[in-house]
Length: 130
Image (tube, rainbow, N blue to C red; front, side):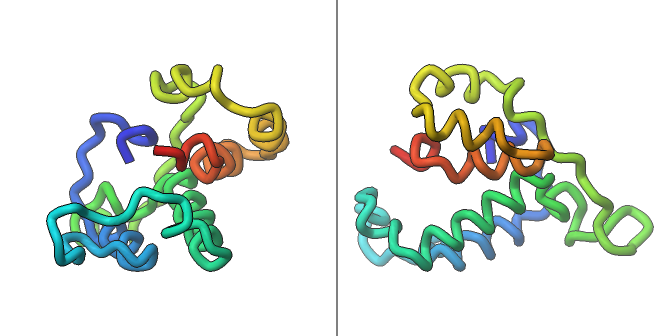
């Protein structure tokens, strides 16, 4: 979230909690203090990767609802569309770019919209590496 939205204040954390639950890592859901596993084998199965792509797509597309209380716009209707962040202009993107593989760089370049380029970056192996 910080890589995508920087210091922008998130007023509705529910979408993030839902994403954590979908990834099988609910907030405060691990019973021991060592936290969730950091190894790729614990999160890189086919279902997990598909879920990560879907979540990366939602974040990269503007993460509708994060910046409105209870997911509503100020008039009480559905959340207004949030423009996708321009990740290529962030310090994090600039710092990680030299380490991107040729395949990742090529995939990102093939994104036809800013939201697509964001999703491809956020779901890249280099971004998911800890």
